[in-house]
Amino acid sequence: MYDEKQRTPQDGSSMNGGFGRRDAHPLFVRRDGRGYSPRVAERLGFVGLGVMGGPMAGHLVKAGKSVTVWNRTPQKAEPLAALGATVAPDLATVAKGCDLVFLCVRGSEDVAECLEAMREAHPGTLFVDHSTIAPPAAEALHAELADRGHRFVDAPVTGGSAGAQNGQLTIFLGGHEADCEEARVAMEPYTKRAERVGPGGAGQLAKMANQIAVGGALLALCETLSFAKKAGLDIAQIRSLVGGGSGGSWAFENYGKMILAEDWRPGFSVDNQRKDFAYCRVAAQEIDAAIPLTDVVDRLLAPLQEAGRGGDTTAALYEILLGMGA
Image 1 (cartoon, rainbow, N blue to C red):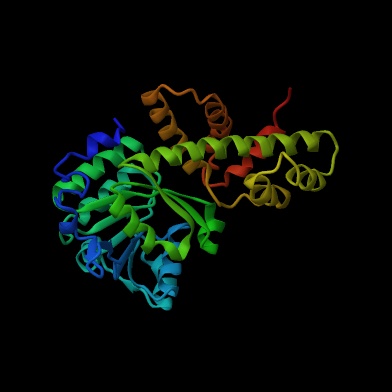
Image 2: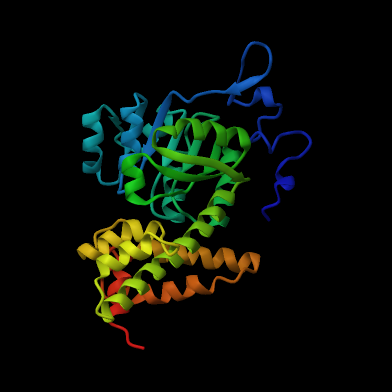
């Protein structure tokens, strides 16, 4: 299903998104008669201005890019307008006025809905999806947009809201090599590292691997500090000592601070984490992979959602573990 060889026939049509020869691909321009270099998109669009998308779009504007933004809740676009972004009244306006459009929305259905509203984009428009969606949905979107004459890169991110605010995100790119390179250049203002990991859908598979690791690290942190609390230890001291040794992780550094402050604002919400875990299970079943720890963390997060705390940060798992006995 994810075999790159199936996507690169000898005529080159799949490799270049249906554009045939490499020099016919809208991404490439001549340089000094010696070959081709990536074209840099000049008119950027950004759809979805939430906890992640807002800061990411802000970095593009601050870098001097021409950026048109849209959000379901128009008020979220106001800070970007103040920075110099153009606020579009609808998605069709974004599509018609941009060469490359980033999306950062919640899930598979939201991405599909936004792309449908932008189907009248100019031929060759590149859509780059930073949302976390199901890998099969990403594959389907690659095929669907190619049929429309558009291009697509699945580019989910990791690094949390702090990474978005600081312009230090890691991004997994899935798609044709040329399209991924164009996307990578455009997103440089908010990335620490962005790499192509394979063909269409591979970016989302890499994000599933990331979410598996994130879930394990989250449980390790919350279990460590809840144990320390019940043992009568100073959890701030334990976080510092354990986090500075072999037990340390991104979760200890970032979520640990939230636990100490009892600050449950997202960050990354329980709702989104459980949504991603559902995608992980679907992908794991398809490739026959065991993800037992992910299933455990998902079950432990469920009571928070059931208690109406799905909007809390996942670090609130600490409170669930405190309430559990041996």
